[in-house]
Length: 433
Image 1 (cartoon, rainbow, N blue to C red):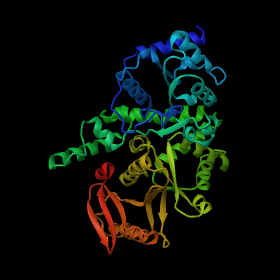
Image 2 (spheres, rainbow, N blue to C red):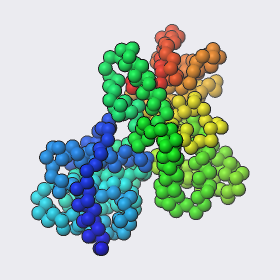
Image 3 (cartoon, helix red, strand yellow):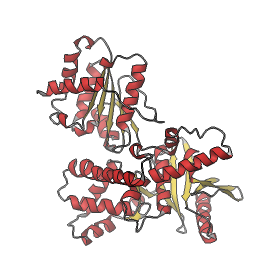
Image 4 (cartoon, helix red, strand yellow):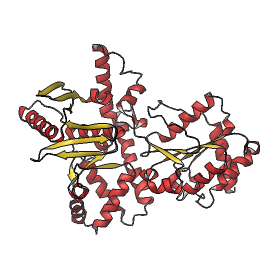
């Protein structure tokens, strides 16, 4: 069968498919005329399902199924597509529906398009020459980059898709946290948080028994490693990257340095060069696998030269893969708070006061004031309470802030020091605030 005939079969197959569109997601992607809507994020976060949710809305609004062109580039039947023959997609579609060419809007959904290097020129040409609305997904942060924007001449708007937030987990359970919380409803939300703590945010594992959930999350971990990192970047010494990934998962919410990681890999017998380790870290972050948090400092060179902190895309993935020797509930809670902040903010740092006290997160953007967030699993020990509060108060004084948050597992309080106030807030409440 020729590639054009294969494309025709896949287009018809998608149009005839009956899909489970799952739980509606809270992130709303808006189509802008003349621009492709790009949804990016880690593998298995629900990007494909989200595309089908958009398709379902279009069909309910009266769009004919024949006007929907959907292709998933993870399908091995599309392995023959390259950047220089992507125009065969349009040829196949209009070969099936010639009357629609130039007369009706076609809704084009290209899932995991990053599998074909050089796709940008094809999508740009499609938007310029056809009457269409284009939606793309990808598992690479480079789809947000200036390079892609330049190649597409500004014809793309991107949105990030993460695994379920706690609010989306509540949606999956039919619980509305915005309604007044009676004692019964508060207990219901708290129970749902315990489920979210165990399940994490990957949609496929919600509600599964622990053994099956752990097995699936471990498979995700290995799929990201081998398909999104080793295969995509043609890594010649994959064992070094695998060992690096396991070190990262065992050290979430901890500091690391490039020199330290290079030395660690050399201690395992890898011929790891510092530049190669830097590439591995960049590729890992590009795949939305792990994230790096730098020191907050007016000097970019000082920020980059200081140790960095590492967080994973999902706290339950960490629990499923880590050795359990170094990761504890406090680290997992800090990781959970990070992913919640990362859904809202691009720029997240950790803060160190002039006397060396550390605050887990300082976040800001152009439209909001700076925000300090400290995470501590429990404040039951008076020495721990004093340490965490002292760090926040000192940071608030240095930054001129009057409010900050201290996220715990279940404790609630308000600490005041003159005009400064620290909101001690349970994690479940912080996640729905």
